[in-house]
Image 1 (spheres, rainbow, N blue to C red):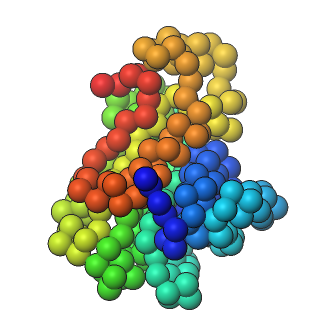
Image 2 (cartoon, one colour):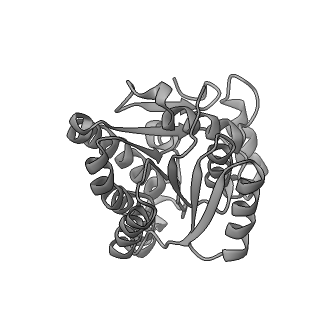
Length: 248
């Protein structure tokens, strides 16, 4: 099951966290993984080496998704060079947290540029190749915060909620071409982003998780692999929740 041999998968934000776990999980199923990274080349190379050790093929791609035109072109050029693009995992994301009255417009714009516009640009770059092949998987990384909101995260919540609307719209637009578009909405996951939260905030979040533990990046990566696989060929427009019951 979940055989991805011969599939080309681009993972943005692939040098760390959920992106890294997704890249490695896809490679373990035989995929050729393109590890997108914004600045940390050494980390991206480390992920690529790990992907190769797991049995897949891997390469790295410098990709600042906030530069939407450049990101779109880079994805399209990668698909052309490799002759195909089967899976796009739009995992690159940032969070700049503040209560609304303290949230700067520039910070709001930055979050939207990366989390929303960047993901859409990458999807646009992937679609032409997928349309020609009449097959493809686009997977957006949204968040439980986009579904339920969270105090102090207006910008992040807005960007992740918007991705759910994008997911449903693109699913309808491209279903006739054999392309599925889905989202994964992680809950409280142990990553670099959540590791820096105050202990009081972490305790409060854990208290809202019925399963009683934080999730791991691997938990989310398993969902990504499923949605990328042929076994998920009749699933599109879905927000797949990986949150331990935090939001139902």
